[in-house]
Length: 137
Image 1: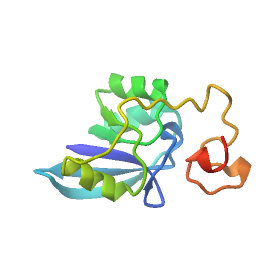
Image 2: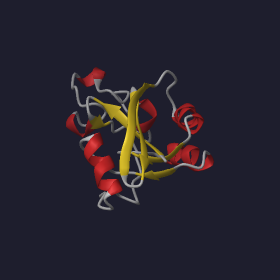
Image 3: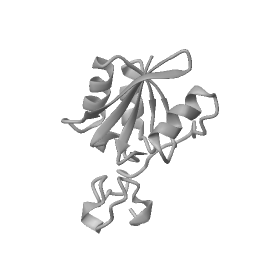
Image 4: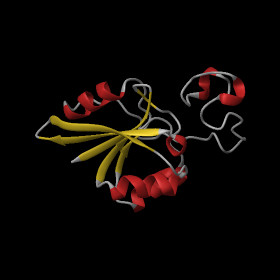
């Protein structure tokens, strides 16, 4: 089974539709058999969901995720675990071992009030990898 994580510098990127990369893992019998980092060329919920579907990804572990991205993943037949933060490799290990801490009620509301930092916080001068809680957005 293929599992993907929006990825930035080893961590789970916190803005699903704007992730610069995804780390994709091939998992079988509770072991990681392969891992690769894939560059995301087209941004946006639908484009990212289609990229993952085309790679036969079945599960996504992510941080913040909005309703549009949730629908895109569901339409692509991809299960997701949202609200996860921290190291990507540790998240895969936790999922495999049955101890992944996630938020089944996660709902990113960044676009409802205008998200001034475009997901990478370049506008506010922070290198937060999309976790805009550090810049107030």
